[in-house]
Amino acid sequence: MFKKVLVAEDLDSISITVIQVLEDLKIPTIDHVKYCDDALIKIKMGIKNNEPYDLLISDLSFKTDHRETNISSGEELIEALNKVQPDIKKIVFSIEDKSYRIKSLFNEHGINAYVSKGRNSINELKTAIGRTFKNEERILSSDLSFNFNDKSFIEIESYDISILKLLAQGYILDSISNEFKALSITPNGPSSIEKRINKLKIYFKANNNVHLIAIAKDFGLV
Image 1 (cartoon, rainbow, N blue to C red):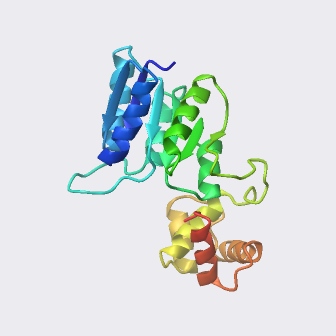
Image 2: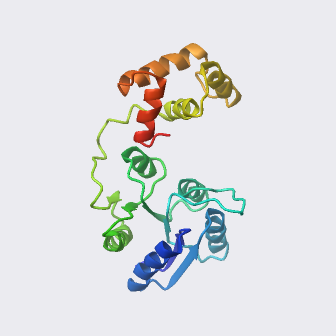
Image 3: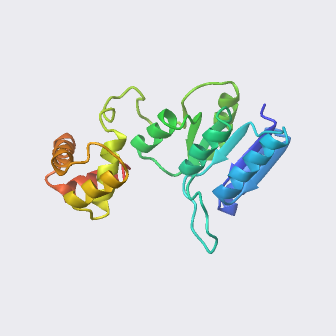
């Protein structure tokens, strides 16, 4: 079983539950942080001291407060973690249920398991930890059901997500073009972006841009 586990969770009631699960599994070293910045610091210190963590359990959402942070979400934490310790096992424990976002956590960030917070989450988390330790892949809690091989979202690229996010923020076509040029994102011409937006509207069967944004939000794309 895992020897050293880090829990990143800002709600005490949830972290107590997660820690209890880990204690039941006889994990020797369990550390808990409420901020993603602190989690990354602990990960780096573990590596520096030659005592690395072998599992991270993290929420996705962290509430903002008086403290300024560089990393504000579990997804950003995992992305940063992959740069310093890519081989660490990663379990996400969250209420998020959007299939696209969950799939992207597996496909783009290499998480090992996803457990949704719910009525049976304690047993689900315990099972996920055990299966992750056995190197099983793409572990999903039983209350979530979708096919990883479903091609529904394969055509949606990061380029499309960038367009949708800017549309959701109220950017007009020329503004998106200027933003893409500043970020060296191509294609960045207004006509190319407009064609892509029209393609997205057809893909999602959206009547207009407002409808498109609403659908994108429902799917967790923005």
